[in-house]
Image (cartoon, one colour):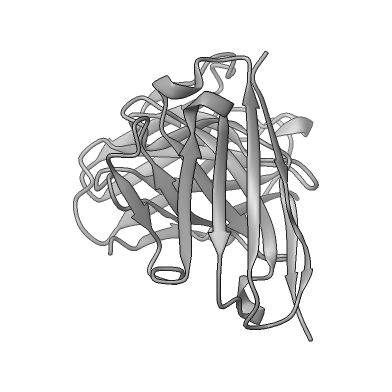
Length: 119
Length: 109
């Protein structure tokens, strides 16, 4: 059974940093692209960042480019999101999602970890 | 960046009726489009990929069509469990870019 378990969320002040983690199991992690998708309270889905199976291709939404860094450790079956210079508008539930096909859509999702940016 | 626009924002439908949801891309995404369903308090679920291919375990009442810039998700006969928010997502430019539409809420009429 595929499982994606996010962690690392919490309350953080504007301008500070936070690192999210996603522990994956139930599939061959290093065969698939992985992504972070977020959802602000009461709002729609926003793709944040994605990384190919070998970290050779990485992408970011314009809203986080230059502030967030995605990475993965295939030996640990883990995905990460380093979030710097956090803003109030980064407040959201952050989902880890497994890529499928050519890696550009998502067949499995975690339950999310909540990030709240507030003073 | 490719902008995805969904309409309507809210669709009121009676159980057993057909629901038709639209998604438009600001430029061609070929058939590289997916649809997701999200219920309150739950993570999204993949319904359709490749514009028209149902994901594993998705009932046949869900169908997708379209290519280029215009796409449609049709639910042929709405069941109580289908009332939810639906999102389209393009992946034509991956890597490095992916974008979601704003969503359509399907509510009980």
